[in-house]
Amino acid sequence: MDIDARMSVLERSPFFASADRDTLKHAAETASELPIAKEDQIFRQGEEASYSYLLAWGRVRLDQTTSDGRNVVIRYLGPGDLIGTVAVLRRKPYPATPVAVEDGMTLFWSAEKKAMLIAAHPVLATNAIELTGSRLEELQERLREVATQRVERRIAATLLRQVRHAGRRVEEGVEIPFTLTRGEIAELTATTLHTVSRTLAAWEQEGILSGKRASHLVITKPHRLVEIAEQE
Amino acid sequence: MDIDARMSVLERSPFFASADRDTLKHAAETASELPIAKEDQIFRQGEEASYSYLLAWGRVRLDQTTSDGRNVVIRYLGPGDLIGTVAVLRRKPYPATPVAVEDGMTLFWSAEKKAMLIAAHPVLATNAIELTGSRLEELQERLREVATQRVERRIAATLLRQVRHAGRRVEEGVEIPFTLTRGEIAELTATTLHTVSRTLAAWEQEGILSGKRASHLVITKPHRLVEIAEQE
DNA sequence: TTTTCAATTTGCGCCAGCGCAATTTTTATC
DNA sequence: GATAAAAATTGCGCTGGCGCAAATTGAAAA
Image 1 (tube, each protein chain N blue to C red):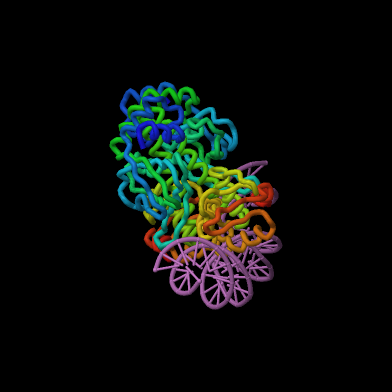
Image 2: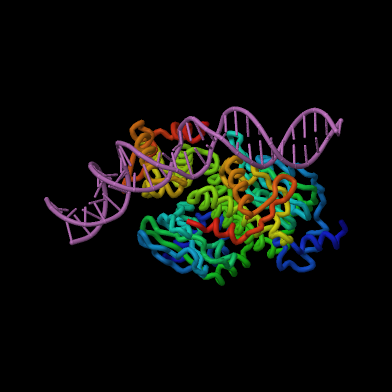
């Protein structure tokens, strides 16, 4: 990737929203590239946060593992999303493990370079607050769902969230453009894979959605899913 | 409160960590004061975020209400904590309703004054990222607990979290220095008040803690509570 | 094409904890 | 001191969904 290609990637990221050409150029010049292969762990939960990343392309799942070995999926990341930035800025260990769900490319900066970038371009600090705030809002929403809703509604809400983040119109409806297993949905939803499987099988039977394994989920009746997410 | 008293309040807040005298003075001079009485709502969830607050003294509970009228307690705030700042900086509606659990005092700034403060003193932007990141981390922790743990462990973890934030050593153990009803613990823990009551009654019987209603909870055997929080 | 393995599905027993109902306790107000 | 109301407690029936087990499916590797 040459500087122009990098700048093209960066200007599409919300972290660089309203950033001028100088900022983009500075960031592009100081970045390094790391290709990622499916199932690569970019870093591990608990490690010292030395580098912060920006996903150029590909998809990444953010996992948190509990002390008794269970996994919670924090979110799916797509192109333009930051990885590990808050931990680097806070000088805390990484709180999660990002796992590539498909091949991709990241741009990365050392903690020093990132701090210098932000000091030199205050718009980046503002954008970092916006992005962290946005993640906070999403987590609050998820906590509310888990605290107050039955599983079906939660699954519907979770799928709609992926649609909102990454959905792509296709002929039959809206596609979630990455592989999402029943197990992963379970870990996003605080339930078990069996319950997700039963639910999705019923919805597939009803014509609401289709797809499993390598074939991406396609929501054929999004309005029906919204109804389910909003039922009492 | 004169300028010196305000500066004394501000320098104790993590939002002003590492801030120099000029910064504190600027902030103190541009702040206004709003006393709060028990049960006051400082603002309402969903309202336009016009002011951001810093709690000088007192205690505040941050509530989020769901579309079907249920309540989730997001967190308890104490002296030095910010209220509404992220929403103001993001130019989004307030995501929660802060309710005073006792009489207190806040300092507040309009959105304009706050933005000017932060633009003039970059250390404040850095601190805002730190604080937002810290809240993110706590919410991730809570989501992991709700997703993977039984109620008892969650209640223990929740009480330990209050101890860590606000606990005070007293003769019999550690006191949580504000009123925390069984209903509120339930809303912090994604369970019902009946389940909290049963659990706390058993723990009180076992000598782990004491207190209800106006009398604050006192954890008499904190180590026992840690064991419960960490059991499998 | 065959084999392997992970993902998905399905049956089913079990139970943690929800939620209804009733009672008791505590605090604030008059 | 009496009353009212909110918080706490307790009994108990019920059920959503967990988790075990087994079978089936689909994709990747050989």
